[in-house]
Image 1 (cartoon, rainbow, N blue to C red):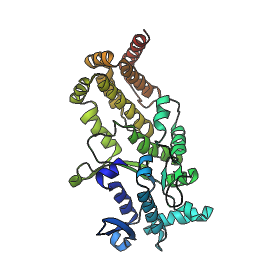
Image 2: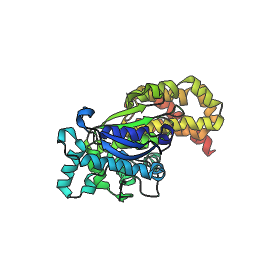
Image 3: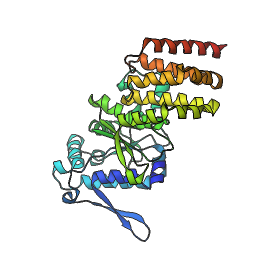
Length: 344
């Protein structure tokens, strides 16, 4: 939602472009007044079937845009084009033959129940009450399985969402600002990671995951999720300059470090973004480093305890596949000591 405001609709433009639809503008009011399908000869590729998971804020702030995106899907689904040129129509025709409902066959916009917000995965992962992809997908779908578009307004649509998600081969999320990154907000792993986990639970394989970077409009680029995670990890997460800067903020700085560990854990649980060396570096830089451990103990021992607990959980779940025994021993020692301090 806020990114749509900052960029004046980059994500919306991307959806329309993938569908092969062009907005028609009224020059006087500078508003979109209609949509037109780009001819396939001009497009030079098939029309891509796009499934959108919107946030509660986007739903509330831009109902007219939700309707426009739905109109674009309806427009493309109604074109008389061969299946190889129009995946939207091809998939809609398959679904229509199964249940006979044109509205359901062309539903591509999903979000949380009217009046609610979020994707549900933060609470699930914080509670540690999950076992596998099926659990993650069940919560993601329960929270996000409501259809939006003309005449829908949040109608329950779990089956239609699952049908659309089974067809997803690419999961994309865009970033438009350097004020935050994929490891300092839970939204990234909840929405993007949740999509990856749900597709994996439904199909047995990961979709290709990408992060679009339009922080510099003159140099837009796309990275794989793995590349983006590695970039953020090296540039900020274990950058000594960032860690030192956090120490200047005392309690809040310690909280931000612990939150970073939690968000990376969440992304790894959903999308498998973390390599073993990353967990090792997190442990050494955040928990086992004498200077940082002293800072955390004095400023926010709860955050230190939480980081040690989370890193040990990653090892226990096999997400951190082959940790060094000495590192595990060190984390357990910190966990025991902080528990004693907090209880005492």
